[in-house]
Structure formats: C-alpha cells, structure tokens
Image 1: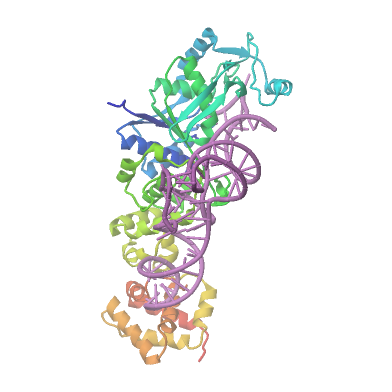
Image 2: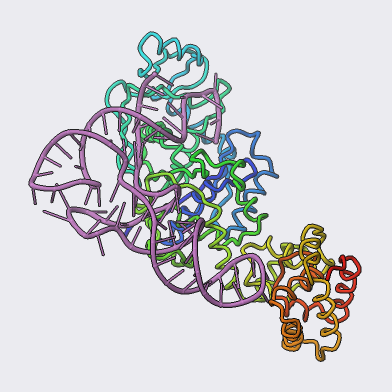
Length: 451
RNA sequence: GCCCCCAUGGUGUAGCGGCUAGCACGCGAGGUUUUCAACCUCGUAGUACGGGUUCGACUCCCGUUGGGGGUACCA
C-alpha cells in the first residue's frame, strides 16, 4: 500500500492569482484528486503585509471559480509562531544553527575575499539573526520528480538566514517545519523555488526528519518569452474571468500546458485530467501562455454548452436578464462570454452607434431603396417568424435582382447599428415587426438618398 | 559576477538509437456563405550551433550560443 498522499498548494497572498500560480494549483489539485490524496491549502504569509483578509479572499475566490476545492485549510504560516520558535531553538541547541549579526554587506565582503562562488559562513555570536549551518563538505541533491537530480555543492551555498533578529522565522525555515508538521508528502511548485529546495532539505536534515517529494514546474512565459505579466494582457485568473473565459476551458488549457497528456487530443474532462495526470510526465521546459489558443478552446466549449447553462452564465456575466432568445441565435458566434453584449446588445438597448458603418453601408448605391423595399415586405409579413421573414427578405433580393448582401446588410445596419449581428432573419424575427419597422424608418430618415 | 535549470515549426506538444519527424493552435489558399463566426479541403513551417559516441542520432556525452530562475533579517 502506498502512503496516502498529502499535497499542498500555497499561492502567495498578493490578491491576484497569477496564471502560473493557477496552473501550479491545478497540478496539485489533479495530483491529489487523481490519487485520492488530501489537499491542503496554505497561505504563505510570513510576510504579514500581504495576507490581508481582502487579498486572501480574492485568492480563495479565484480558486473556487477555477473549480479547485481543498480538504484542509486555508492555514496560515503565521499561526504556527509558537511551534516555529520551538523548532528554531531545537536547531540552535543542537548546533545546526547559530546567531550572527552579519549583514548583506558582510556577505559581499566575504565573497570578495574568498571568491564569488564561495558560500558565506558566519561566526557564532550571542545575538543577531539565526543562520542555518551548511556543512563544509559534500552536497545536497534535490531528487525532483520532474527534473531528476540536481546537485547543490555545499561550498556554493550561503548559510541561509532562517529567522530575523527579532525571532520571527523566514520562509525557507517556516515551510519546511510546516510541511513536516502537516505530513506533506508532495510539494509541487514553480521552478523559481528550485534553489530554495536545498535550503529546505537542509532544514529537514537538521530536524532529523524525512523530506517530502519535490516537483518543480517550469514557469509560464508571455508571447515575448518574458515572464508573464499584465503587459501580455491577462496575467491573473481574475482577469481571465473578467475577459469572459469559461472556468472549465481555462482548466483544460492550463492542464495541457506542459503536463504531457495524449498529444492527439486537446480536450479532456476534469475527471480525465485527474485520472491521467502524472507528475513524471510534466515538461521540464517553460511554456508560453497563448491567449489566442485559449480563446479557440473557449469558443469550442462555449458553443457546446447546454443553452440553459449558457444563458445563466451570460446573465451572471452581464448582469442583465431575459437574454435567452438572443443567446439562442448567437451561441454559435461567441468565443467568450464577453463577446455576447457587443453582438447582441442592440436587441435590448437599441442600435449601436457606429456612424462609419452606417455611412458606408447605407450610403452605398441603391442601399436606401433596398432598405425601403425590405421595409415594405416586412410590413406585410404575417406571422412574423424566422421562416416568413426569410421568405420576405429573399423576395426583395429576387425582385431587385440584387446580391443578398445588398439587401441584408442595410437591414442589419438599420436594426443593429453595426455590420455584425446574429443571422439577419433570426435577428429581425426576434426584434419583432414593430421594433424592426421603427428602426428601419429611423435609418431611412437618416440615410442619404442615392439612386 | 556567482549558483542552478531549460532547448523539436510562430505557439503548445509527441517521439524515448533506425520515423516520409505525428497532432493541435496560428498563419496562407480554396470551398460554403446574409455580416461575424463556425464548418470542409489543401497548404505553410521544426529537431539552435559545433564536436564526439555509434553501423546509425531529434533521441546519449561534452562544449558553445540562446532563454529562464535564484542570488534579501521577501515569499
């Protein structure tokens, strides 16, 4: 029997859940859910400034939106101050750590003297910050599930500061103690933590405790190869949500970004993802987050959503109600939830204001006449349903010997105000005869007469 | 500067010593078409470079170059 998994994810509480962090959270989630493990949510808050209740709530909210739940937590590192102090004096007493007043300048001076590649070693003093004593000889090797062994020679490692002079502990010490106490078996985090791993391993060793398994994920980059940031558009899952992406699409896309799933497929249910996820399969090289591809995935998923579901999401997204009829005729044209209102808002709030489109389409040769003919045909259409509307409009096309678009576009611009809308017959039928005629009349009044 | 990681088309990836280097997104052309999408066809483009090892390297080793991360009494 394998030991039960205890996995933890620990976003930093800065308020925004960054996309890279979201992927890390997702992989932790898939790992735990796929192997019946326990998932612990920890907030890395040794730096008190960041973990304001508002920031934490934003993170939790983003996690929930993504559909990631956890079994225990959130727990805060700052809640374990007593235990941290205890572990600290344990190391001090055993000689694995010492106090030192050495500053960053002292460390620099040390390297000037001994060489830049030499790790700093301080002298034990009665006061000052607490530094962990790194062995002179040998090395610490990180056995990483994803990247294999990475060896860190002790001679290159500085004696890391693990607690401030005031006794408050620092990250590398606190996580190690917390992971130990929480019985964490798997630590899955970003590659930016790889160089922290030997420090934490050294803490485990000093505490004479077995370390968890580590897996460091490659980082996510923007299209320019640089670290993903707001410059690249959305950089946090909150922004993705606001941009109208579906949580399940984001999940699916993020999961595919480096997890080594079947390359012949690009769609997996969340259950499948959890079932197939293998830490060993995760890529070692960084990936570029491509929002266009996410858009494509999103559009595909959105188009297949049951209509009731889509309507509910759109009403929540736009804050408007009674959207269903419009959603029915627009679903195929949406890529994100945010696409809906620009496309269909005219049904509810009147024609959009697009003078350029109006002038171009209704100013074209014969456009005004075509629109007048359409008005006449529509005025006599009964009942006013999609079928009859289509017959009426096509009749106009035929009588005028025009191309379809020479009639349809003027009508479209008259009712929508722009050149883009759902299908013209569906749109006209949905708007109803009275409103359609009203808008056509209004357009006719504004349109320049040209024959 | 020093420590560490990474390297298949524009992007995400498959490959695990012998392949016509596969799939998807994008992009291009065509088809369909009432706009925008969607959809169908076809097409485009890749193993960073240099040395080895081997009968044989995208696959293994070394170096170079390039990219990234770390280097706090931050997390």
